[in-house]
Amino acid sequence: MHFSYLATTALVSRALAAPPKWNTPTLQHWLYSSQVDEQSLDLLDRPDIVGIQALYSWRSLEPAESHYNFTVIKNDYDKVMAKGKKFWIQLQDRTFSAGNDPVPKYMHTPYYNNGSAPSCDGDSCDTDFEVTGWVAQQWNLRVRQRYQALLSALAKDFDGKITGLNLAETSIAVDEDANNYTNEGYFLGELENAGHAARVFKRSYAVQYVNFWPDGWNNTNNRFEDSFNYYAKHGVGVGGPDLIPNKPGQEANSYVYIPKFHGTVPIAVVAVQEKDLEEINQETGQPFTKDEFVDFAVNELHVDIIFWALATPWLQSS
Ligand SMILES: *[C@@H]1O[C@H](CO)[C@@H](O)[C@H](O)[C@H]1NC(C)=O
Ligand SMILES: *[C@@H]1O[C@H](CO)[C@@H](O)[C@H](O)[C@H]1NC(C)=O
Ligand SMILES: *[C@@H]1O[C@H](CO)[C@@H](O)[C@H](O)[C@H]1NC(C)=O
Ligand SMILES: *[C@@H]1O[C@H](CO)[C@@H](O)[C@H](O)[C@H]1NC(C)=O
Image 1 (tube, rainbow, N blue to C red):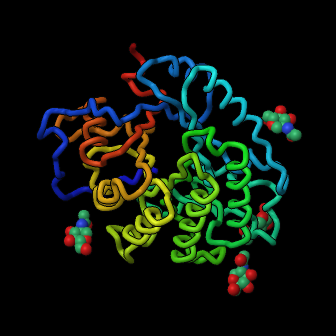
Image 2: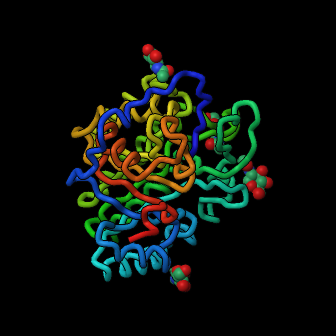
């Protein structure tokens, strides 16, 4: 999610104060892709790439209630193993397109209240709520039970095989007066799902992408402290979809807590997604370079893995 914070305040520039020290032995470079295709498999041959994080929607994995089909994951997993590389699953319970529903078809009944709710992405959702996608109603117990059943089924097949699985970002904008939504219900539901993921994945990492909370700007309602304490207590790793050095919106939110909880949560990861590649470094007037991304990820956020979009410029050259 790309939260363009309306930055009128001066940027806090730290990244370039010291020379980059990005050759930290612990940082791993991975690919991030919506699918394991020919391009990503080719890039996996690079010796500097450890593995791939691939995306799967809930809907695609549960064609009928309690009937799971993990064939695509299994095939992707086999291809990646054949290259001697590692595999990571991002489980999507939300979409960023209005025509795409993330929840299984069978949920479209009153019993599940249709399972998903229309959502808005961007910085003007408060004033101009435009439907740009859908999110699973994780504040609804019936929906959550089905989601946790999916996590259990995934763990049965993939725990200890994959390096990790992450749940989608916590950022959300829905009609707060519809579908019995409450901020508290959503917050607690998200925590419960993450705790469940960590309980069933005993040998692979379970990670929550935690970037923003709907009523938690700058730790309002103690959302960040409470969630990170929960993750530490329940063995949930943390991370986020957007590595954007010194971005004010992120700096007022998750970027405070990711380093603060370094060593108390099992792992921290961050992705450089396609849109992040377009972000401009205010100091140089240019898009961020690999060194600038890595320096910030290592020295400011203290993350263990960066997941790079396939379009990343430095991946195009050997
Ligand atoms: C599972 O999914 C695969 C790939 O989409 C498909 O070919 C296969 O027919 C599905 N299996 C079942 C039992 O539906
Ligand atoms: C919403 O909450 C009311 C009151 O608790 C309950 O009767 C109703 O079934 C709920 N609806 C949904 C869709 O969860
Ligand atoms: C559920 O979906 C049906 C059919 O698409 C629609 O008519 C109904 O209004 C939806 N219910 C809710 C609560 O959104
Ligand atoms: C966040 O809140 C604290 C007080 O709780 C305040 O001192 C600080 O300036 C705020 N930071 C931002 C970036 O809004």
